[in-house]
Image (cartoon, rainbow, N blue to C red; front, top):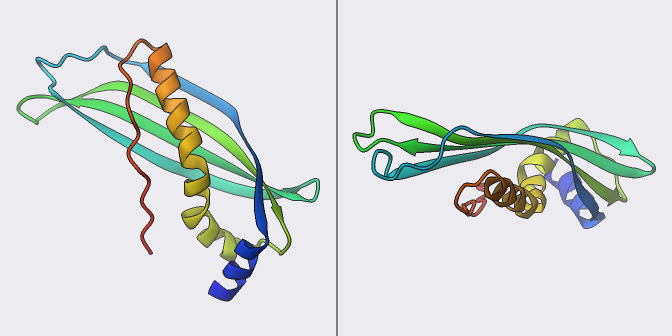
Length: 142
C-alpha cells in the first residue's frame, strides 16, 4: 500500500483550497486575573473525497476551541470556538481509493490545509474582538 501511496504522491498537485462554510462564536472576553492560562485544540474532522471535473475534491471539516484555565486549574471557561469545511482540489494522475485516502488524509491534507486554517482562526478571532492567537505548528508522526 505504501508503494501505491508513493505513486499517487508523485503525480499529485494542489490546485485550489477554499472555505465552503464556517461558523464561530465568541463566548467570553479574556480575564487574565481569573483565568491566566489558555489552552487551544485544533483538529481536523471528517474527510471525504470525490472526483470533480477530472480532478479530486476533498472536503475537510475543521474545528477549533479556545478555553481559559482557572488559576486552580480545576475549571475552564470556553472563550471561542469555530467550525468550518474547506474544499481542497487536487490534480492527480493515479487513482484514489479508500485505503490510500486513509494515508493521504493523515499525511498530506493537514500539511496543505494548516496555513489556511491558521489564517481563518486568527481572522475570525480578530473579528470577534479577541486578541490574536497563533495556531501551533502541525506535527505529523509516522
